[in-house]
Image 1: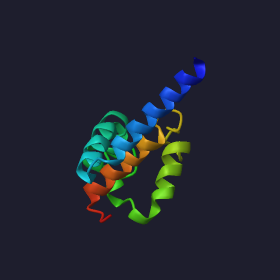
Image 2 (image 1 turned 45 degrees about the vertical axis):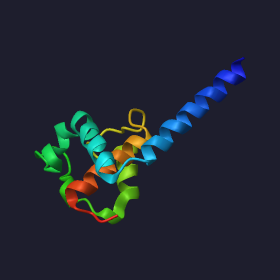
Image 3 (image 1 turned 180 degrees about the vertical axis):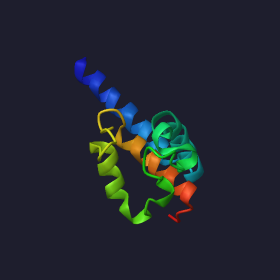
Image 4 (image 1 turned 90 degrees about the horizontal axis):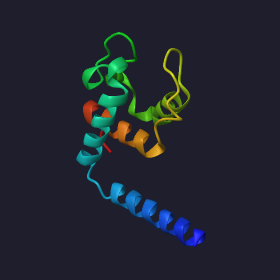
Length: 106
């Protein structure tokens, strides 16, 4: 019975991940915006415009996604690590939001 429960959980997670990947770029960016507001805005400012505490994310280079992921996951300078709080798919949503505000092309 336990194996069946675990298999069911794996299938449900796979279905949820598939549903997330079926979202449009605008839907991903909107989900990222909501996450940004609750997790990042207090330091990085409204619409990525820094309020003087965190890095102004309007200047973050599109080509440095790995740096973004590493910085958010592990922390950097005054920024605490978020790796234990934010999941990889949430980091992707944040990246989609940052890209939408900055006008990055896919």
